[in-house]
Image (cartoon, rainbow, N blue to C red; front, side, top):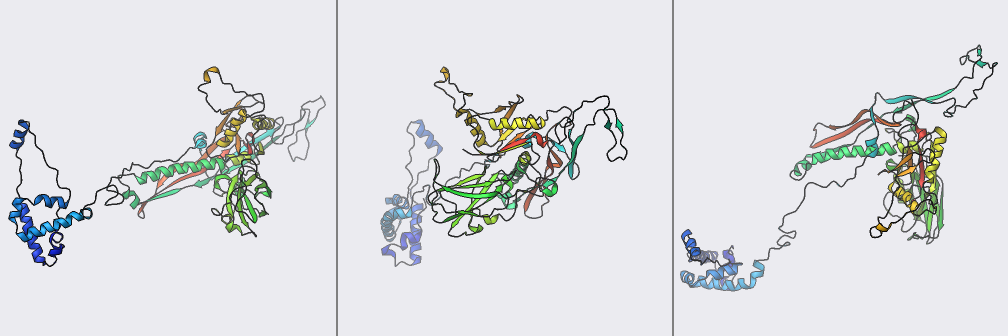
Length: 571
């Protein structure tokens, strides 16, 4: 316990305020000398051994807790004789002052004193927890092959007489003895006729899939790397995150990418047409609009999924009153849905005050409750971002594109009267057109739940769930559709959830073709001139910088063997 300074002991007492600094110092030195000569007890090893040998033990008084306690205990009769009466009087006078000032001279050490955050250890667990989902099912499944040059090219025989594909008409093969068939080469001047059956015809085309370059980068400053020592290797974290980020972005490209028409891809989405706003009373589960006393102005875009959207439509307006407003459009082929932007006012405030209100996987969206007054403004949509020059067509755009074998935009919930009927219609159409026999269908998690729930709410007697006697005290709730039986071919079509599938869309995919000698081992494949690699750049500033790089494209050899169901309404 440290004693108070000399000025505290002798300079602040009322009767000692007239003392000079020299007198204060002299009295303090006298007190310290007396304290030093006070009797003390020193325990030697022999004393300790003797005490414990006799069973007496040794006790110690607890030490003084405050400066007042220390000085009071020190003023023994022996020490009183060792100092002058004036010094002793000053000490005793000051002790009385210290007695009343103890709370100010010593505060308790707590978790909030003397530092508000406490003199405590920080129980920081290292390293940082990576709560970052990173599934890449398409990338894991699709074959990856070596590409060469600037594009992947192949030739397709899309049909010949008898296949009823490729727009090749069928002919009757019957002949008689007098049948004569022209076998002259095309464009030849002289016709050569032979007694033979009619010639068959062919259809085909060339296909070119241009490669694109892709890359993302990251940087770690020297200060971040070195300050993190003992907690986490920040540079290693950067490299790992860069790798997973590249794989996740490629996964989304494989699913949702759109290339430009200038490179023979599907190209940009057009804006929706037929925008209408309909005010109506709120239905069950809906909330009437609030805070709207004038008009509502709405613009929409065609949604392209993760990578962008089309340009905006013109504004439509309506004046609701404690109602909800249905926004309805006609979507172009390939759109995953629409995005809605809304503003209010007696007159249109413009795109800078028109805020993003949500997105829908169907052709309709209901405005309800409190409308947004901040966030992403429609003025940020300055150009089309649905297609990219450095990009290629992904699975969903191909399955909903012009070359797809089947597309049905429902704009409704899935059937509960005949669960799975939407897929059966697709299977029948694909089989009729090219004898396709799909392998799987991909759904958003919400849509798969709706399909599974349709079994439980079905009005059809074809499905029944039974609880047996031994399950009465341990019933397992819920069921899931994991396979849809193709009622045309009898094949089981796997039902899978894709983590990044936009709600309302369900591509139907053929992994292989049911055709002998088709020369197509896989309907879908990734071709890379350079597969994904990492690059650590030379240090040119106070940072460690890295990039990923890959150069390739997704190739679909047989789009007509695939299809899609879109516009599944969320329920």
